[in-house]
Amino acid sequence: MTEVGERIKLLLHNKGITPYRLAKETGVSYTGVTKILNGSTKNPQVESLSAIADYFGVSLDYLHGNSLWAVIEFELIMQGKSLADLALRTGLRQSYIRGLDRVTPDESDYEEVEKIAQELNINPKSLITLLAQQEPPLYDGPVISAEEAFAKEEEGSEYRAEKLDRSKPGGLTTGEIAALEAINDPEVGLFFKDFLDAPEDRREEMIRIWHVIREAEKGRKPGDKQGKS
Image (cartoon, rainbow, N blue to C red; front, side, top):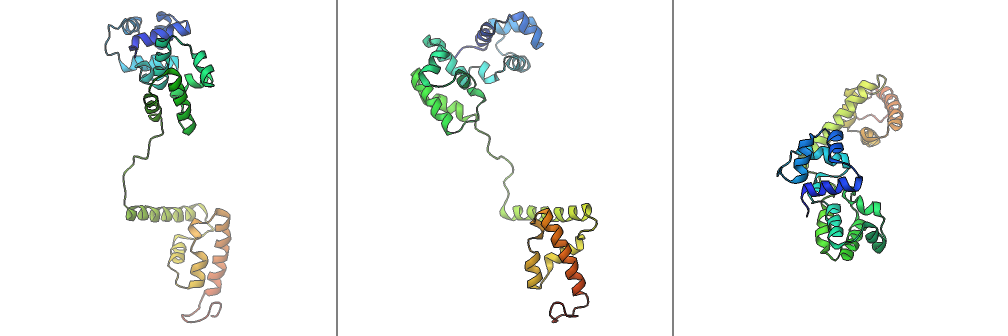
């Protein structure tokens, strides 16, 4: 791996940019830039390196030689090969190889990286490991039990009910929704059991039916058949 300063020198050379211009356009002092380039600053400030990385459109890992493209580029330099040669021999686009640091990998990317490793005659595991680090992070939120998840879903249902009550003055009240959930009549209960999860247009239709049922059921005594008052 090359040091940070050497890698920035390479970027400057490839882009035809002078250290003075780099300092001016990144806001990093010229003294700071020269110290990074000549290696007199062993631990450059992260802010300075971030500004330089953003300027060149690369990552901090690239500047430190720890990214996928940084490793490939280093191998090309050490072996006296060009990116064009590598692209020709692997059948890959130069832009794809150069942009590997920004790839969210899928199965095909791992296959392409293996091709690159074989062409450079290096252990593919090193490149595959770097590519794997670009995988989207797994969910790292708090671990909850099934009971807690169920409780959160219940809270969500209550929230949806309250939202409906507030946003639709002509809709069901919170009390009516609670009554729906507590209905013992199997015919009515079955009909409305999925009300809270129904699409909006279906809810409106169900609300109208519910009001009709409420009017028809007024005065019905326990044991009477539906519609009989």
